[in-house]
Length: 210
Image 1 (tube, rainbow, N blue to C red):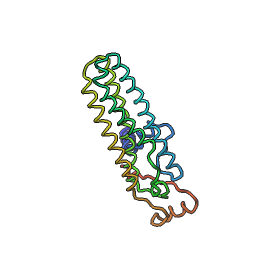
Image 2: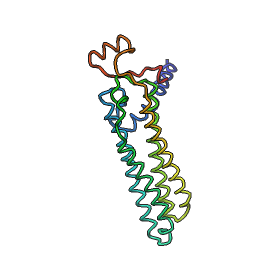
Image 3: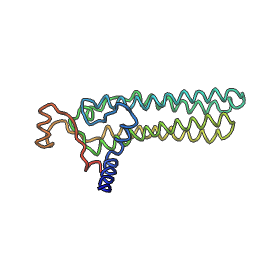
Image 4: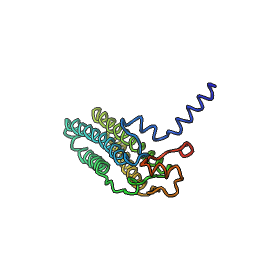
């Protein structure tokens, strides 16, 4: 019995996948299953990621302040820190101000379950990128304080900023390419009845997430 319960727990944990991680990381996030809450969920996701990156940008400004205490180092690394800041500022703007023009996704009665899982995966990856960029800036700040390993720290930060930019671009592509159903056709009798009754929820099955 204990083994069966453990196996069931493991199965449930696996099925939650990226969505489960998002639910644990973002208070109030409920996913994209319900049509009426889909736009709000997307806004919350983007606000959360951009907000964390904005805090990281403030920390990067602290690195510049630390370097400015040494005139030589301040001048030597001003341009490199400035480029990293511009990248970070651009990423924040891209995420925060991304157009909600994906009418097919936001207005659909049903979205394919594997597409939902792909989107959750990209969202979870974006959170991971934000955490990595924050760690990079912390490492850069430490290097600035010690006056060593600055070049390597800057290279790592720039690379992770580029990776985050590319990941967000791919997320936008997923939103544009998701397969949606805008009416009850082909959804089965139960889905038709639910739609007629005004229930616009989407059910993710075990099979789709297993």
